[in-house]
Image 1 (cartoon, one colour):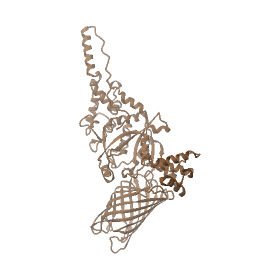
Image 2 (cartoon, rainbow, N blue to C red):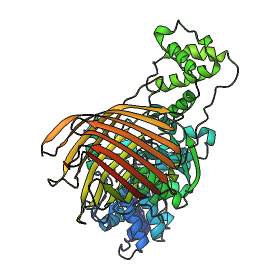
Image 3 (cartoon, rainbow, N blue to C red):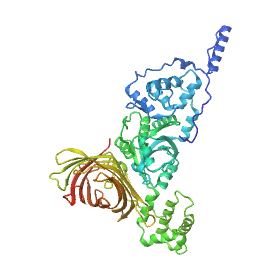
Image 4 (tube, rainbow, N blue to C red):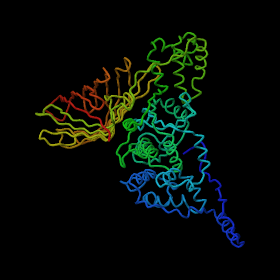
Length: 638
């Protein structure tokens, strides 16, 4: 962890200066003088020799649980999550918390001053544990001037957890991201950029694409805590990656905040195995908050999924959130300004921004609204490259300074706080009627994570689909239950094209499905997508156009590859009513038309209607396959 100041330096130990009064006999005076000098020279402290290690088994259950949390010990796996050689004082400390308890106490209150000083000042959270839980008195403590001085300069007395929305260029960020902000009493609201942020992230080498996702799912990357100025984190997330930030102030007092910092200092040279789904940023921060306030119960010993959105909801539902604020990204602000521009204004801005056309239209020919929008767009472009468009920015800024009025502030569309979004897991139950069947099929689907194109998109990126390890069960005509489809992963990431940029949208769909009339079993498939998204009428209508290369198992038991074309239109009639009309054509599959409609019933429930028409299905006696269905969807979290 990179801290603003080095804190792990050993200090000179204060030597005891008092001694017994001299006895009347000269020999006794000489004896005690030499004895005292020997004690001072050896660095021993008289009171430490009398401290005995309290029995671990005699501790109360809450006290034992707090010790397990300090070690990040998992009972289900029989070991700690912490990796590294400097966190444990006993060689078996990672798998034996009782041994680590004994070793920590003995070294922290050792007769040897150097060991006592090093251990107490390096393991401040454990020292705090012994003080609160075991009643260790102040006389048994040594001063830790460097860490005390650093904590005073940091002056953190409040905690804010920050949720960053998804970054569409990275599939792993589809769940969002969370980090902490340390608030200082010296910084009022207008100076919060001077605060520090605590981030837990994977240490990622130059790896991307499928290999990056595979490593992240398998725990290949080490994860560690780090500290950066808050303004640097804002630059990284809102400027460079275009991610909106939601800030949730927590009701932690200064002592609880300090306890968290104590523990972070203990973890300075340690790391964790980082997993995208469970041991991720959210799990790490929740465990850190539990150490700050030991009575909290925010995480289970073993959880299948810990998603950043769920983290925010857990904190809100336990009454820990006191205030919520929103910080839009530069990209969000620019898109809001752009939506209010006319076609002629957009064309004029494009002419000024294009170097080869700069002479055709002078900045003074632009109105104030166009100048403000142009400067906002240049700011967005130059976030990652300070040299980009410097000449145009100078021209527009100079001309804007000659105009009256303040720069136009974008009026952002009403956003629902991410903690008010649907939960991350989904179960659905419904009926499906297909051509040639005499009775309805029963469909049951379990989707652990997390969002599709028709879900309500608070807290998620609009036009995104993120689905992992979903399973669909279906009944057949003889009332048997079988696996209808298994989807390993489905990702869709779309970004709208505008008059100024045409980003490429993409998707990948990997799984296996079975048709009720196909006796040969499952048909594995891999479908990829590349294309564009276009938004109309303030994003109430979105058009997706994709070219879809694929490979899958055919009816003849052979694997076929080819390409398809997909067109989707998404309607958002109201916040609680959404529809999708799609047409697909694949070189081995002919044509499929589909219509879906979703109606929200509260935050966690949906009713979905579905109608599809498809040519060339497995039944040779049916030229056109029709299916219609209805499903009730319920969202929940583990």
